[in-house]
Length: 416
Picture 1 (tube, rainbow, N blue to C red):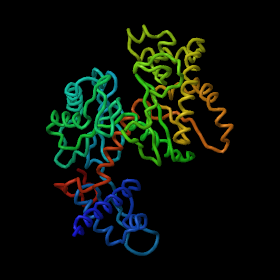
Picture 2: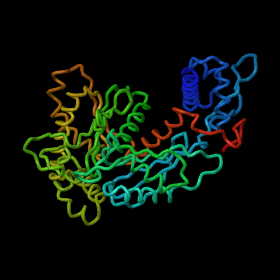
Picture 3: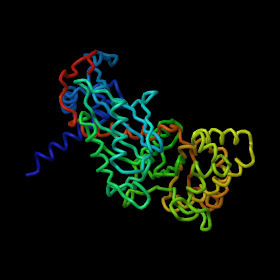
Picture 4: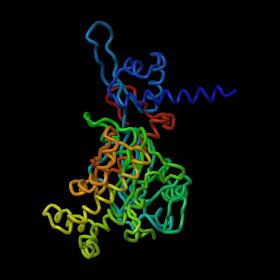
């Protein structure tokens, strides 16, 4: 009774297998796809024909195996067939980039000023819609709009809500719908995700691409920008927890009698390592107010590199606080890698002594337990990298969402 549905699901899964292999190993031959996926050659041939009809794959040249026989026709991904749009909504700005299935971010994206991620969802949707409209031109007839992924600098709960203001809640699905209403020509799914989750995902894969780097099973990510956020990855997948808040380190208490946090509690990690907290401790609050937080952070780095005692003391205090939070995280999750993103990645040389001091007892108690503290490598665009990866995965997971191309890709030199 369920055979037709099951058959369609199996075909979608097999198309995904074949497309992912071609994307990862382009150019490659059908025999290589069959050997890697375990599918029989006849099935691979039929699946490749389907992907070519959708414009996702083309034949591009041939290769010989060094012996007799016909040359193998090589298959290549057509990244331009699908357009992925990613928007990062942070404090004060919205960054937008568009790219294809290859996932390469352009050197320059579109940046639009915004009042921040909090406020009425209609106002936020207006700002995101305007930023995307300015950044994205109408697609050509053979360019399929794959997804718009909005990475929001705010917790996005699994129940579909994110805090729009202290004590208030708004629906992330409602925000996605409001953005879609403002982009009637977009014609693609709109997804709202947490920016720390996206940054963690992108940093994980960036570090995994380093040959000498062993992939960790459980990874905790923490970043400091305007506030402090985090994420938890298990075997390369974001672990959301029961409500979508797993890995949110900003409000882990690190001192029972510590300074009052903006959330109302005392001793939260954010009160020690947020950009505002550190800059205030160094006496850069007036500079931040007059010229913005970027100017204050630049001045902080200058003070650190020159060995200014007040700056060194602030980072040592922040390092001890971060070490205490990491100690709690690894005690609960048994994480073996902590990735520091945002401004923390730049501050690692000055944070490390405090972190190590806090973790020394645990390392002595569990000498064989692997734990590394690693700075992120993707900088302020990490969340955009992760959002693009999430958008691409929509197409890779189900290539049937891409309709047949008006001009199917049938041979070398034909691009959408």
